Amino acid sequence: MKILKLQIPNMQSAHCQMRVNKALHTIPGATSINTKSGEAYISMPNEMPAAEAIIAVEKAGYYVSDIYESMMNTANGTEPYTELAHC
Image 1 (tube, rainbow, N blue to C red):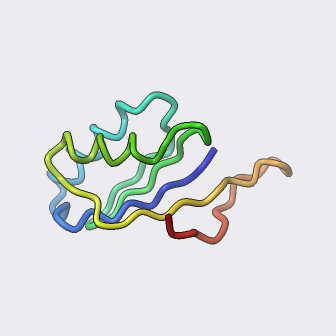
Image 2 (cartoon, rainbow, N blue to C red):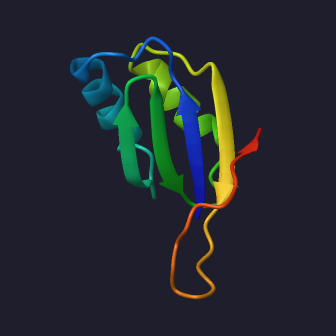
């Protein structure tokens, strides 16, 4: 699994966050979705392109200004965030 951090500057209110959260839940295999003012975090399969998340956000009426990607470490049974690498 990989973790994406999406910068979504026009997503500020709780209503906006709910719309983006709902849109990200339409991505097959997406898990652990979390939105807050201006940001969204999503875990998705490694083979799934980050563009899927961008498309979902845009369909909800918002835009992604920046995106960061990291890989989950599942070797020892934990899933900590690694350092986010800019895409």
